[in-house]
Every structure is written in C-alpha cells, then in structure tokens.
Amino acid sequence: MQNNEGQIKGISGSVVTSRCFPNTSIYEVARVGNERLLGEVVRLRKDMADIQVYEDTTGLRVGDPVTFTGELLSVKLGPGLLGQVLDGIGRPLGKLGKISPYVSKGIHIDTIGDEIWSFKPRRHKGDHVGPGDILGEVKEKGLTHMIMVPLSANAESQQEIAWIAPSGEYSSGDTICEINGRAVKMHQKWNVRIPRKAGKKLDLNRPLITGTRVLDVFFPLALGGTAVIPGGFGTGKTVTQQSIARWADVDIVIYIGCGERGNEMTEVLEEFPTLKDIRKGILLIDRMILIANTSNMPVAAREASIYLGMTIAEYYRDMGYNVAIIADSISRWAEALREISGRLEEMPGEEGYPAYLASRLAGYYERSGNVIPLGSPERTGSISVINAISPPGGDFSEPVTQAGLRLSGCFWALDKALARKRHFPSVNWAQSYSLYIETLDDYFGQHISEEWIPLREFALGVLHEGKTLQETVQIVGRDGITEEEKWTLKLAELFDIFYLQQNAFDIIDAYCDPTRQFMMLKTLKILDEEVKRALYSGVLFEQIDSKLSFARDLMDLRIKENEAYEESLNSYITELKNNLSNFLAV
Ligand code: ADP
Image 1 (cartoon, rainbow, N blue to C red):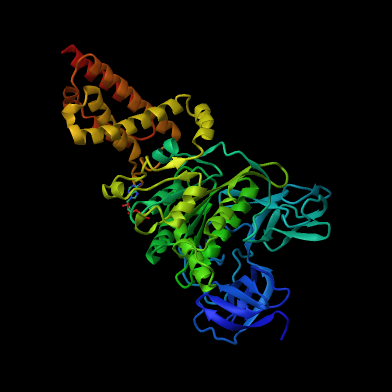
Image 2: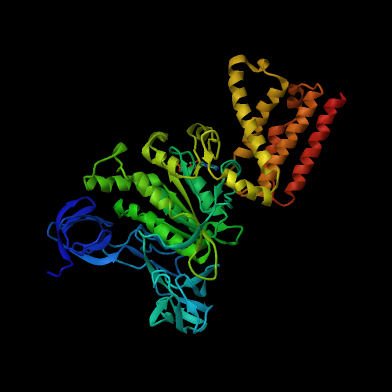
C-alpha cells in the first residue's frame, strides 16, 4: 500500500472514517471508494481521518480504498466562468438551456474547460511584475476579463517577464507569459477555503443600489457590505433576492441556490437564463454564475458551495469588479453544518447547531468588503453578501437568524402578516435596520440631493406617527383625533401604497432608481404641505378626502414610465394645488 492510500473503517451518512498518515492535512481532498468519490478531510484524530464526502455514499463499504491526494479543495479560475451553472463543488452542470442536474458519481470535471479566447497583452517583455498585476485581457461575454499574475506566486516579489504572448487566439490552458522560468496560463487554481489576499480594505461609503425603494432609502446596503433577509415561508425571500440579482448595481452576481424544495432550484435554473438585464442590454446570465446544489448530492456539498462562490467572487473582485453573492438560503447551509457536526459526534450547541456556527459565518462574512486588490494598475473591487434566512415557523429567535442579526450590516426582516395581505416587499420597517445608513448619507447627499436625509426622516416620522395613530383610533375611534392627525393617518397609508409596496413583476415598478425614489419622496412631502395648508385654513379632512382620489392618483404615478417622470409628478402637484384651492375658494 502506498503511503497515501487508506481504507474505509467506518461510514456515517456523508462522513467516512479512514486510517490516515502523518502528512495528511486538514481539508486535504480524498478520493473515497472504488468510484473515487470526492471528499475533504474535516477532522484528524491520531491516525484516523474523518472525511466529508460530497457525493452520494450509497454503496460504499468498509474496507474500500481511500486515496489522500495531498491537494486542497480548489477551483479553476479563468475566462469562461460567466454564465456557468456549477454544482456545490464547482463541476459545471452545463450552460444555458442544457443544464442537467446530475453529474455522474466520482467524475471530476474542471469548472472551466480549455476554450479559445482572444488574448490582448497589456505588458511587455522585460517588465517587472508581481502577484495580482494585470498581464493582459480577454473579452468574456460583455466584460473585460483580466489575466493576472497568480497570487500564490512568490507573494511579494517583482520578477521580469521573459516572454509574453502577442495578441491572438489562445486556449485557457496555453502559456501566455513566462516569468522567471515560470509559465503563466490564462487560468489559475485557488483553494476555496483560503481567502484570496487583497491589498487594502477600504471604507464602505458607496451604496449598493438595489432599486427596491424600502431598502435603498430606509435600510441601504453598502457596496462591500453584508445583508440578511430573514422571513418565514412565502414572505418573498426568493422574489426579493432574484430582483436584487436582476437589478442591483453590480458587475457580477453569484447566486448560490441551497433550495428548500427541489423545484425551487429548478425554477431558478429555468428562469434565470431567460431573464434580460434591461439596463445593460444583455442576458442576465451573462454576468452571473449560478451555483446549484443538485438533487443527487448530499447536503455536505452545500457547506462547501458558499466557499466556492466566495472564491469566484474574490477572483472577479481582484480584477476590479463589484460582485454580489446571493445565497438562498443560508439556513440550509447551517443545516448542512449541523448534520456534518452531528455525524462527527461533536457537542451540539443551541438547537443542535455546532457551537462554531456564528464564527464560521463570521469567517465567511470577513471575505466580503471593498478593497484595493493586489497588483498594478491600482483598482478597487468589492464583494457584497446578501443571504436569505428561512427560520422555521418564521421565528426570528432561532440561532441562524440570531447569528445573522449579530453579524450582518443590514437586517431586512420580512413579515408574514404583510405577506398575507399581499403587501410586497413585506419588509417590516420597524424591525429592519442598516448599520451603513450614516456612512452612506454623504453619498446620497452629494449624488442625489441634500434633501435625501431630511426627506427620509420625514418619511420615517410619518410612518411612526401613522402606526401610533392607528393604535389610538382603535381605542378612541376616529372622532378622538384631530383633523391634522386624520391626514397623517391617511398619509401613512399613502406612503405604504405609493412608496413601500413595489411590484417585482411590473416592468416599471420592479426597479426604481435613486433619483426616482427621491422624486417620489419629495412628491409626498409637497402633498403633505399642501393638504396641511388647506387644513390650517379651516377645510375639514373629510371634505378633501371625499373629493380627491389620492390613492388612485398615486398608484397611477407609481407605474408611470421613467421618461418625463418628473413632468408627471409636477403636473400631479399642479393639479393637486388647483383642487385644493377650490376648497379654499368655497
Ligand atoms: P419565500 O422565498 O420567502 O418562500 P417567495 O419569494 O417564493 O417566498 O414569494 C412568495 C410569493 O410572494 C411569490 O410567488 C409572489 O407571488 C409574491 N411576492 C413576493 N415578493 C413580491 C414582490 N416584491 N412583488 C410581487 N409579488 C411578490
């Protein structure tokens, strides 16, 4: 027996135990059984290794061979990743329209193949380059894919280019550059568990515009920040994430599907390839990578899938792109962690989750951020993380939601009661928060309007007051509140239908850019001022309310095309002023 060959001593679901060797390392990849199933060493005990197997372990027997490969779980990075649908360990499931949810057991296919790309050098023979330096570029879909000096190569040092390929067609496996006797290809490998080193972390002072009003205005996410979307079944987690994937102002989206039901992932696989990125005029999938946990894979692959997604995200971040990772849902990832931990007979923590649940999640979140990647020319790139959480029974006190609450910069709480009323997105504005709000104020103040902050405060004031008045009316009745309060109650309702609700399936309403968000808020403010002026002059609220169809008018305005939107709002205000002046004239 060679000194990297062991034998299965025990099998517990997806965890297999084998004898190992002094040089066996944690997270080393092992090939298990006669079918050579892919696994990873997750624990070492004296001369025994526990291996988490990423494929169906049915048919494995005690005594079957185990090969320790000496390699770590890694992914091949290079042109050809965009538009891919991968399984949890990076095997391609096919491209557009030819997706098969099955990969035969034990088969190892690289994430990207040796396709031909048109390479254009950016450096010359004799130049000195270091890790992360951009050597050249290829066009990948609509994006410029930078070919960089691999990070692993001689960490800090600068070395001379002995040869660089001239512009032309090359396979991604061809050598395109020789640096100090070392061949550099268009692709490179990286271990998914190890963060790719970046030069410098930057402040999170730019927003990631989602186009969803309630999120961008009240609970904004920073580019490079983290957000969780907890919500019970049917509250709109998937729709919200898909709409962010479609509209968010980022270059690349990595969508990790840990579907709760098999058909949910199938829906994503069928639907996403058909969606258009209207603003960029390309197919959405052309700037996306989908990671799907397939039906023939044990839950263990889910555990690995988020690291695979993060590594790909870091690779594009290093080129200077803004990447969003969207995971639906992180609860299924945590369940995989729980199952593996159970198989390893570790001491269970709260609700059976391992005690390291929060620290694992924190380690993952630490890989997000806004950075200056290594290498020249200097560039910035970011990774933003948006995770759905599906707490059983919608109970936010469970450990995964609580970990999300502690670790994430944005908490976008979805509300069952709102969803039941078909109030979408069902974001509960009283429960949600954003830690980025103050740091992003400067950006909104400078790029949208100085009035952004006062208008947001005005809006929140109306919503809070409306909620209190609702409770008061339930106790004392409508006659117990003043005319002005009746109007505030009405205005809170109008906020709800005009501003907070947003139909993800309406071609116009689905995406609202910040300028439009601002104009809409401003309209509500003017509406408030005008109605109050009339009330102060003695007109009764009922008189106005019975004559003016606020709700219908605002609903119409919500779905008016972007072209001449300002004009539509202005003519609404002019008409409103005219109508109100009629009351005053009576
Ligand atoms: P979850 O993933 O939380 O189980 P879904 O995202 O599947 O819930 O949403 C359930 C349903 O709610 C959707 O099929 C859709 O009809 C409706 N819905 C959710 N969000 C919106 C939205 N923003 N606009 C319109 N309908 C929505």
